[in-house]
Amino acid sequence: MNIILLGPPGAGKGTQAKRLETERGMIQLSTGDMLRAAVAAGTALGQKAKSIMEAGQLVPDDLMIGLISERLDQDDTKNGFILDGFPRTTAQAEALDVMLEKKGLKLDYVLQLVVDDAALTGRIVGRYTCAKCGKGYHDEFEKPAIDGVCDACGSTEFKRRADDNAETVMSRLEAYHGQTAPIIPYYKQAGKLKTVDGMAEIDEVTREIKAILG
Ligand code: AP5
Ligand code: MG
Image (cartoon, rainbow, N blue to C red):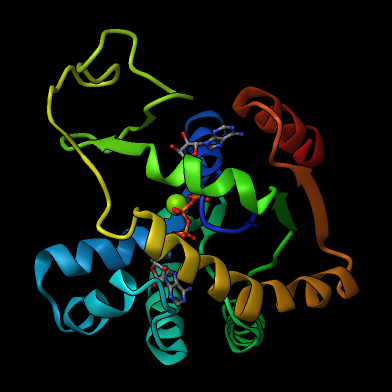
């Protein structure tokens, strides 16, 4: 099964994608994670993307479309993929349709996580991850069992994203409402769109998603 997780910054796309990976053997394709890896590695893409991401704006479509097209050709997508953070513009959505058709792949569902804007800043500003294994946590909503120790790998080092501050969140939200939300009717018309209450607790959101995917 191949799906898109769609929603504003902090909606829970990454959180739910990781759960689907563990439970269903699907692979998370997070364009944000790919870009952060490119920035950390100092590649040409990373150098172009760094300041754009720190400003909370969108990286140019041609770069993102090329990145996803190459990624979809790798073998680990064969058991199903979860697009997390792509597509984010009408041009990306249209290019995705063309590339899926060319590659003989089908999109099953587009799950829209619906969350009030007011809840998003708190979610994002409180978020951090394990510096070693990448497991995600939140100061309030998802703490490790032992304070300061990663549940998954025991590491005591954690990190926060450069764009996870209140000012950048405002620009990211603007980009979502102005450039990404307009793709929702596109998927509704295609009969692929399902909405999920992203305001519910994390486990409840997972249950709702599983009920849709079957
Ligand atoms: P990206 O990394 O995709 O960031 P984003 O879309 O802003 O989304 P987030 O990762 O912030 O949120 P999420 O929905 O994954 O939430 P999470 O599960 O972590 O993109 C970053 C940047 O890269 C963009 O700004 C852009 O510059 C660039 N970029 C990426 N893709 C691009 C593209 N296609 N085109 C152009 N540019 C692109 O949850 C957040 C927190 O809330 C966590 O701490 C979690 O524990 C908590 N939480 C989750 N669910 C719940 C819940 N139900 N209740 C309470 N807390 C919850
Ligand atoms: Mg994410």
